[in-house]
Image 1 (tube, helix red, strand yellow):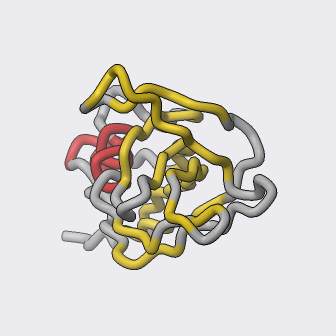
Image 2: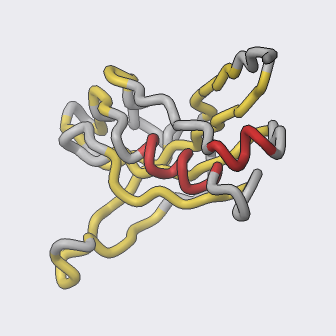
Amino acid sequence: MSRVRRTILIGIVLSASACGSSSNPTSPSTPLIVYTAGDAGVTVPTLINEVKPAYTAQALAARIQGTVLLSAVVLADGTVGDVTVLRSLDTTYGLDSQAVMAAKQWLFKPGTKDGMAVAVRLTIEMTFSIR
């Protein structure tokens, strides 16, 4: 029986798009201001704890490889809030979902603006590779 070696590569790509505000899901009446990495005076969040996504058995059997591109909001407490798929790899075998679930577990040193911790939107690229 041959062994399949799988490698999951993950990187953070800074995005200069999608700034503005969105609603805070826990308090719809209070808007959450979300900055974009690269906005004037905004520092980039620093990754502290990365959780790698799981390769589903079905995706592994189908030998699906490639990249999921995500948009994620790093909140002022360093946790990850809203995560959406910008470029899908796989909706059939669950790799997109696995990438979103993993990203939501990441922990960051939050980004700042004028010395205060703020919510910052990042683009995260997760690459699934079978070797």
